[in-house]
Image (cartoon, rainbow, N blue to C red; front, side, top):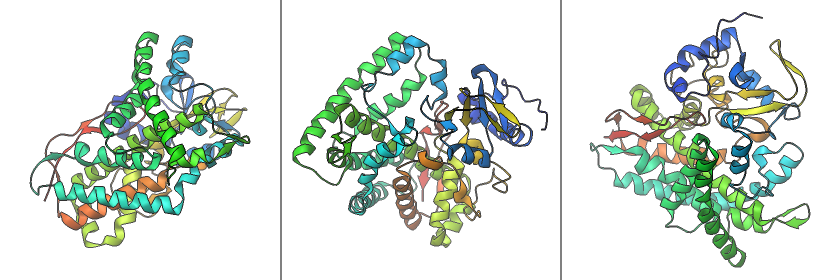
Length: 409
C-alpha cells in the first residue's frame, strides 16, 4: 500500500470551498496515494476510485444505507437529530434509507409511476415547457439561465410527475430549497423553526392526495393510492414522505445538471460546435455533462461487518463516504478526466446517479429533460456564452449555481 502524506486538513469533505477550489489538486492524489482515505474528524473512510465506489454501492449487505446518507448528520447531537427526524412522520419509511429486501418493496411502489403512458405525458410537458423557454430567449441578450430554465423546468416536471396542480411553482421551489437547506442548519431551535414551515407543505400534499382519491391519473400520488405495503394501503406518513422525496430530489439535482451542462458548453465552445454539427452526439453529450457536473457529490454508507478495501480495514459500524464526484474524475476510468469531451468513450460509466440498487429512480427523467433542452437550444442557437461570473452554491451535498448569466446567439 502506498503511504500518503494527505491529511484531513487537505481532504476537506465537509467544506464547500474544497469542491469549488481544491478538488482538482486533491482528487488525483487520492486516486494515486489514498483511494481509501481515513477522514479523521468524522471517522469516515472516503472512497474516491470509480471501481471501489461501484463495488460498495452494489453490496448493500456490507455497505448499508439504513444509518444515514449525509455527512452533516454525523455532526448532529441527539436533540438536533430528534428535531431533524420530525420533518416527516417518523412512522414513514424512505426507500433511500432502506436495505434489501425492504428497499425493493418500498421502491417498487414509486416505480409504477414510470409506466410508458406516464412518461409519454411527461415528455409532452417537457417539450412544451422547453419550447416556451426557447421562444422567450432574445438572441444576444443576457439572462439568468438558472431562473429562466434550470430551476423552473424540473419543478414543472416534478409537479406533473407527483400529480400536483399547476400554478404553485414558487411554493414548490421554496419547499424544495428549504428541504435542502436543512442540511446547513445547526442548533435545535433553528432546526425547529425550519421544520415548522413544512407543515404547510404537508397540508398541501394532503389536499392533493384527497383530490387524487376521487380523480386518479397517471402520476405518483395515484400510483401510491393504488398500491399496498405489507398487504395494507399506504399510510399517510408514507404518502407524505414519497411526495416530499420526489419534490426535492426531482428538482434540485436536475437543476444542477441543466445548469452544469450549459456552463460546460459555454466554457468549451468547440464541444458546442461538435454537437451542432453532429446531432448524433446528443446522448453522449448528456452523459458527459452528467459525469462533468455530478450533481450529488456523494453519500454515506455504514459497514455491517469488518471489510478490507484496498488494504484498508473498515470495522463494522464505521462509515464509508462514496465520493461520486471523485469517482467521475478517476483517471484510471476516464482518460484526461478534467477535460469536457462529448466524444469521450465510456462516459456513461459515470456514477452521477449513484450505482446499484440505490441508483436514482428518476434518472431516465433527468436524462429526458437534459436531452430535450439541449436539442432545442442546439437547433436554435449557434453559440452559448457566459455573460458574467456564475454564482456557485456553497454546500457539500450538491454542485450547482444560484445564478448563471448567459447569452445565446
